[in-house]
Length: 220
Image: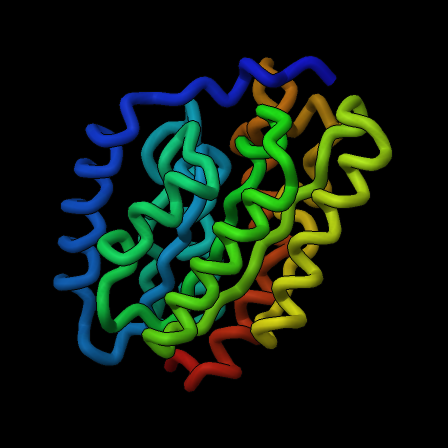
């Protein structure tokens, strides 16, 4: 699958500042008892090429509210972000008071052929920082593209279950489950989900998110 260029980086600093102020506004406007989730990731989390209300975090929030849960799902996704970029912005991207982080990073490292040891080290550091802050994490895994070779695929795919076990974090094995390999659920780039794809992603991860909320105090 030739899509190394599909995750083209945007001006990360500018984008980060935009979502930072948006995120702070969302957190501060939420009621004190609202269960606040931060979706922390790359373009898959950010809602690349989708309209307002169509991205993963918005659709997940809507699905949780439809279940009667008082939740806010803040979008801390930055298109083009790598695990190194995520580690650099983690502390100020996840405000105090966050009740759960959905951590989804590593796809851009993989698409660039970065040695798996690097995203693993960065994700390990992020999980460690969030654990120190007593912020629970739901780890959303990624899988390597087959065209990178069997050895790379095996090494990369092992990152997420290994870290989930190390930190006792719930693991959603593949963030694009049900969407990858289905052109009708993807944009023309063959990688990012379209609106129907986002709905499939939300439907599949929803029970895992609900359990993570229940395991961390619940949301009325």
